[in-house]
Image (tube, rainbow, N blue to C red; front, side, top):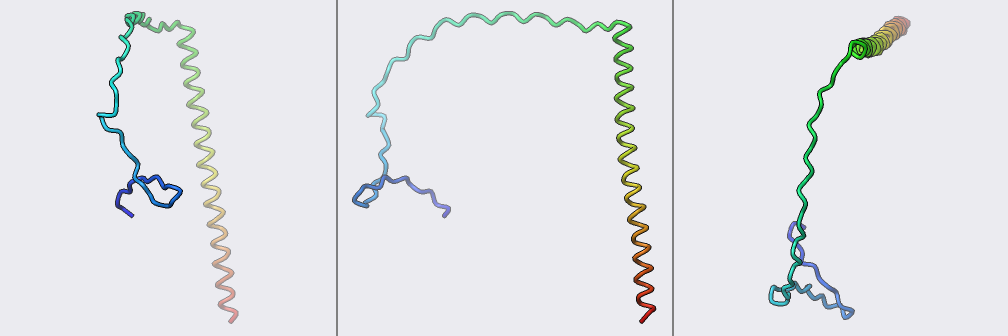
Length: 107
């Protein structure tokens, strides 16, 4: 299972024959075409710095504040959902405990 297997070419007679690999003697050398002249790459223009005006700075701050408020509201609502689920599971556990205790006293 872990040993490498040699690929075989089964003949119609049923006798498997290993595939032949070409040797370097069988390959005739071919001449590669001469490479074409490669043009030099175009110079990359230097990046301009981002300039913030007063209006864009205020809009950026307001957008960031809005994102913080939305993410905070989502996290608080998720925490509230977990707290409500935990409280309801605790109430169910207490009720089940009382029911089991009443069933055992009835015996």
